[in-house]
Length: 454
Image (cartoon, rainbow, N blue to C red; front, side):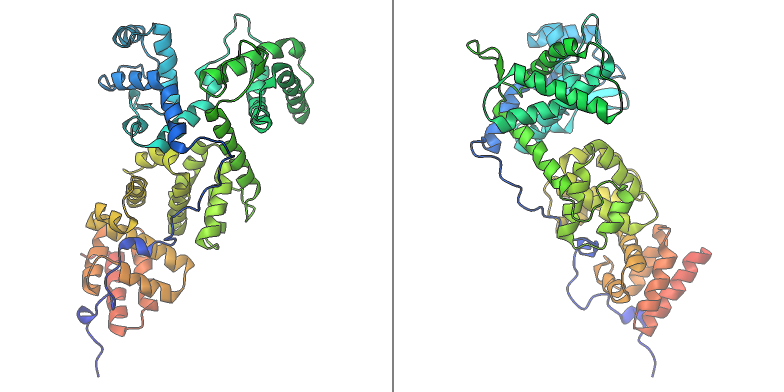
């Protein structure tokens, strides 16, 4: 009695499933977010307010869109370009420079290779309320850059930095008060917070800080108002301030993020991305997403995304897949960084699928955007993750997700992809597969790849 030939061995005993079914974590849907406080406007209304706040910045970004590269490599608008924009848009050159900075901070303009170009958010401005709100929140977070403190004789930069660090507490107090707050109360709170910061750092109190803090508080409140977070002062009550609907909503979002960070279920908030991902490999998808959110809430988004992508570049294929699952929790803010790694061979398949899903494509159909070679590369990478961290039966089941229709077809294409783990994957499959003919064919293919045979 002889073994069956591998050419008669179908890879699937069930209809072919899409390649996305092979990924370690298939569930990417997010849980319903917590509800904002009663009285908070709806998302469309908040987006309308944000669009109104950034009307001139959007006009300038669109005007500049017809002139890519018109900015200097640093992103600063040259004087002649600022004058041209002022004439075209009916604004002063000073307004143009302010709106240029606001457009950059809100993601309406981006720097690519030293040239300023329209940002991806600009294209979604009229149709995507979420993109609009995230753009405004990015500006809100950067209020001190949008309207920097530039007095003729400025205080110690360290004191300015301490005021910027204390500002979230002031805004949180305004949000929780839910009513106009006297400026004097905010000044007392600012003095207290600056003193706490200096005590935490074992630094002496700042000389003359009490005289400078009122001016710095005025700057903070003015800058927050200019980005749309504070309402204009009531002439009848000029010594009181209150948040706008946008400002109150944004502060609530930040407070929710802090609560999520404080509730990290697996205790990996302070760990590196690699350590956090390895811990999440042992969790089911729901708890893993909760841990991703907690880890992300504890650090700036740009740094977190960069660290996740660095972890994805490593040798562990499982971490590569988990890193992109964590990036799915980040969502839109990770888009520029993910788009930037599309050219990296080891990350390209993951990045292409991530971007497709971000744009609303069904995960089961997004794999059609991959070339046959890229799909095979991703299949090997996922197999390497299963071989390193899974069980034999999972590795055998992984065969069903290959895009080829037979063992010989799979082995033929696997040999030409050039994945660095091809030999190890084939050897592991040969050891795990129950069919002797298939196992023999995989061992032969592993030897051919190892020796460089065609």
